[in-house]
Image 1 (cartoon, helix red, strand yellow):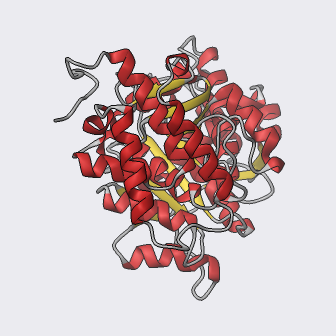
Image 2 (cartoon, rainbow, N blue to C red; image 1 turned 180 degrees about the vertical axis):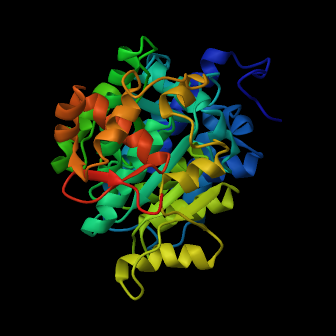
Length: 413
């Protein structure tokens, strides 16, 4: 028997199912694999949610009896105590979801996560919660992941890919870790800010959520602390998501769980640098298991950070040299159409260079490479507008970054 968001079991009220979903999420945060195992035995998460709390407690006791001696690690005592306390408390009406929690039985739950073998019973949210859930259900979603200690090349490429995807209207997802994750989020935030400015100048809707960060801890826990400023930016302009309840700290086993949610939310995953055994590679493998598109950025042969992407390429992942590769796979069609018009589904209007800001920016590069500040002065446009236009032109293949924040007309055109 299976309960779903549209047809809750007649004997269990929807509010009770939602309370149980939050309770299951709390239990999952303290004991690895318990809820997933329970759902598998019941034939799915919906059927597991129909279990009475005493049946859940009995399943926990049976699992504890079956566990081998010494299976628990030395750090698990506090988690075992927390798990036992939540289990004894049972579902709490006071914990019923509000706008900062969405459960498996809610219509707003991201539909793509229902394809996971073990979907999170609930997601805890911070930032633009309502708009973020709407964006996850409406927009193309791509994960950009990679090493926590990338090379300058990897960091720049991750930022370029994330920026160009965002400029094209794609919602970029990552894990808000150091390195590639941070570069992808920062670039997406900057591109979304430029896109909003460009849309405002054209009298179009300003756009919504800039990026989505999926965490391996509670959304109120800023891990790593050095990313505190980025946390604040994502919270103000994007969405923070976690399957772990408030206050839960980072533990190694929670990050692979986070990675499966990241892969589940995304139509495609792009890996930019990573060792043979890396969290980014785990995300890509989850995506492959789900039948989603996986891209890998090739690197220099023999380098440790190239090992992960090259392994994916040998396993059949697609080569990603720019956002264009991903956009074509997502069915964006003619990439020569202006990025702002792709966002609204309108065709680009013909115009002269004087009344077309993109042509003005491209024309200003005819004399050689220039930075965004120099282009802004030459075209009399605001710097955020120039950055947004450059992102679109780069996706179209008209210009390319050449280091030091400068751009030039793309070679070979």
